[in-house]
Image (cartoon, rainbow, N blue to C red; front, side):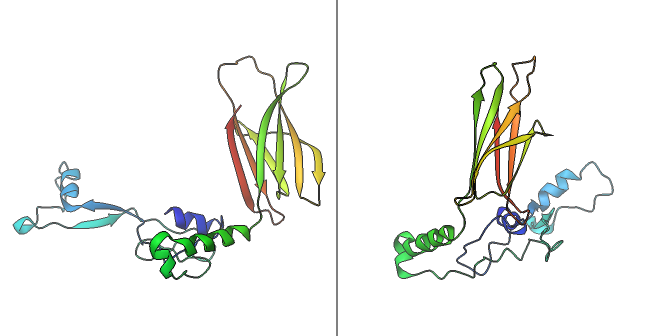
Length: 199
């Protein structure tokens, strides 16, 4: 289910050693559980099976959400890797050496991104967050789910790095920390980085 969500939301590549992942995507319930669950209902269709037999069924199937496969069940189908299937080597039998090298090359081919934030105490006693980004083209900030106003400080187009400031509003109550969520986007408006922290 994690792999399906990873692929359906275009979060990254999936390196797989088979044509697809295991095809789990539902809760498995035993026949005995269904009998107990429905025992208060006089119209329950579930009765003990003869000679102590049992069975189980898949309940609450997961459905895919990608543009091309929306509504397709995950159960019995799994998720194909992207790039194509990796074929294990003799060196992989001992320590997955070639598999790890392939994964490293795959990660190296993608842009490295940075999204870091640190709290700054200003001279007047107020607080701000200084935010550093790399390979992120647009940034949004939310403080307790309310949009925050970001002020660009520096931007280096050559290294595609930038620095922003976010002023934290003063408040009377100091006991509860606030939730800061940062969302970074690429040029095509795809979400490429998320940071959450308490401030």
